[in-house]
Image 1 (cartoon, rainbow, N blue to C red):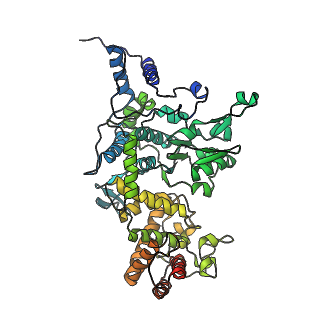
Image 2 (spheres, one colour):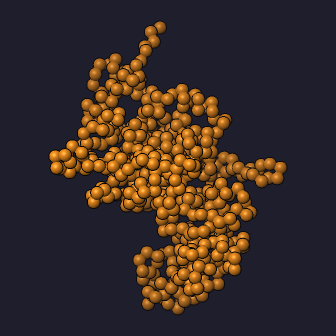
Length: 544
């Protein structure tokens, strides 16, 4: 029986890193290298491995040792797609989800994004609780982190208590999707604390050059990384957030009069629950994120798995999270084009518009129809504004349950992520289920509920995602009832959607037809009629 060999893992890891550096990769392994001489962006690229095997030099013993240690550091899972007939890049993307689960890099039994092909089971004597068994279902944190990772401008907020896996899930998935060392993503992370400054987060001028009378800008790794992570963003002072507004909005920042273009890629920010050690995140900053999820603490029944797989293999956490057949830049290009090409039917867009219109319209906000929107409620907001309103307190209305409406960014997020989710599910067209699964995660952090939102269901005080699911379902039911009573409503919303881009002059409809549509819209018993009438008015003015 061969003698068991003791392996010095630290030495072996250093040997692997040296070999990669000799082959031209730039691997940031410790803080001293980060503080070292600044290189230009082309010289300082993070490691990105191709799917092809690379031949390593050295004797066979060292190669065998490297192979053994690489397997320890780099968990490999055979890709397995849950979507039949999926393309190869999509199969690889699904294998990322499977890898993170199987290696316990994110532990949660919660499958909170489920679809109607499961079986609903009512629980308890009063049947007040229910759960969906079987069918297609995903964990929201893993699902939306993966979808955000394949979007160049995806921005995701991850909320939850300390130690729940908010930051690590973003790093592990970012590593798996982009073939990056987890250490690199760590070093490129902005860590939120009150003393953070622009120089620490974004860039600074080289002090040595300044002594010589020269100016050389040193750009921080955060802007160069294809995966950007801001850890505990609500521990940053509000004034420190100001420079990040521009980054979230346009992908660039301005430092000392110089415009710095950040490397394209997704951005993740984590936020702990409100306490004395952090600050409230301003609503305009929140609105710049596309989706937000809430991560819970570890399930007690998962403690054994946590101990065996996570604590017992802590070395794995320092590695690159790899799948057997890694995603290549070409694969990511195919995925992005696939998402872009997913069809969003005008009927589904009409339902999305109806929901946003019902939430944003406000009969008491102004005298003229042009002012009947929550954007005009600068002096008094719902529900104080709603006492004498016809829509207040009715089961079919949702307008009085939030203080504010939703922005154009919310609409953009719902559209883009509905298409991404449909692609993930192997579909070429967005369906109602895709939209319903996305809306709560793209909206709950953008609005402030009123006390009326909790009157019939007090548990919505904490469950804001559940609240938005309920509001969207109410709006969908309202849409169906309106279409049943006024079948032409579906045609009108589809027509408005078709002519929404530009000035509407491309829609070939006569003025008298549009006038009839406006009269029909005026009969709607919904706050959605106010934005709809304004859209039709613009179409009328441009019609021949």
